[in-house]
Image (tube, rainbow, N blue to C red; front, side, top):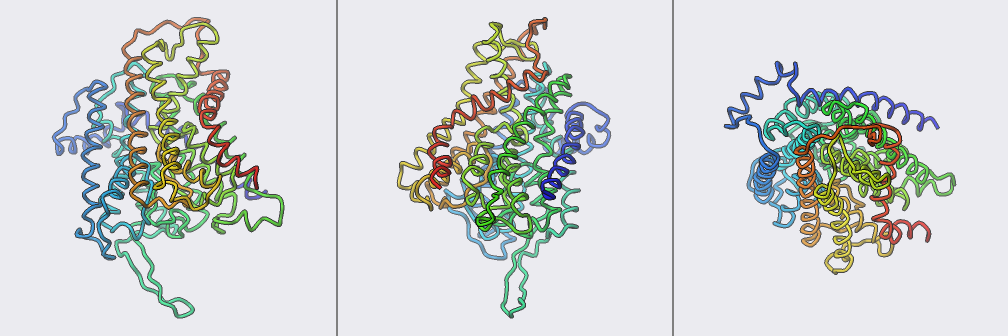
Length: 547
């Protein structure tokens, strides 16, 4: 009971920081007083890069984003392939094979951070810093910039310049926050050094080789940017990445901070704060439903099976600290773990999986919010069908063109997940990786593909996925899952921006009221969850009923 009360207090304290952060982000991407602080540095960087802050249309904005990501993708792929001959490689780690280098480069470029290698022994310090750490800033900045452009279009404003928006997300948000939090994590016991190895003698006289590195700077952006990739293979279950309850709590906060603040940014930027608050509370309701259900199913009352409940969990966090981490990391599409999800009970594992399938319970920074707005538009359309009126959002009619684009965006994730899972189960190269045949084996495969499509990156960790088949399959799924939805949703916002506004009347649908919030929550489950019900019945539900 005490642990639950502490958890409730922590979540309340986290909630108090979200609106101020949302308003700060709105100011950061608008002309504001903070320009006096940041603009001289930004202008210097523009001149250094040879860029001009000219206004772009949505296609130019999108092209700039894709081009920048493609160039960086090639750059980091080359680093992974040739890390064996590059500096800062004290363990003499060889270059990655082509399939693994492709998977790793796509993984970190798409904010997924799926790791088919063991962190500390799979990458050199140069690769960890010049490639992985670098992309951990680039990927969330890309997603956030896309979301800001999307919000501007919905609010009837020009989309802006991608490079300007991208740079502001780094200079005004990610870099200063990461610097401050890295210092705090160092004070709490997280290492920060380029001395990779220390040799020690244990109490029993045995020699130990302890791997270290710039863990603190890595840890902060891993959580703040909803990246999730671990410096160490066991991620935040490692005592260097998560030494104690204080660092565990701060990681909760960092994972939730930006994605849960974006509704308030949206409300401020479109000048409809009530609508932003409505979105926040709708997602919060779903978050608490999933969180409470996960805690109930994992905390067993039978004292004879307490040992099973603690399987795969760190004793310094306990069941509650581990389960809540699993809920938050899948709700925010971060993918970091402090417990092995393969050892969660079938229903708890299904709920973590459900967070990724919905991809609307806050979601990852930027791209997750755009997915939430996809469901908002679907909910507006359903409401219009029920009352016999043309659906409209922010005074702009949702007509045939927009609904076709929304339908395509809505189908991307189910198609990638279900076809990817079917291929992996059917082909020997895929099903040979299953370590636990039967219902649990299906869940292992489903979780891996879902984590890739939703750009989460966590895994059940019982799957032998370090193969060419799994590297190529998940790499393609991650790439398509990331960019196709951004392209389609920006096209929807641009289409709406080009339409004349219609006047609201007494019969217009109010999207800032509790009634619409309840409709939106229903849409999350009706459209999102029911799409995957058959495969969930074959996997975790079947496993649960046969225990």
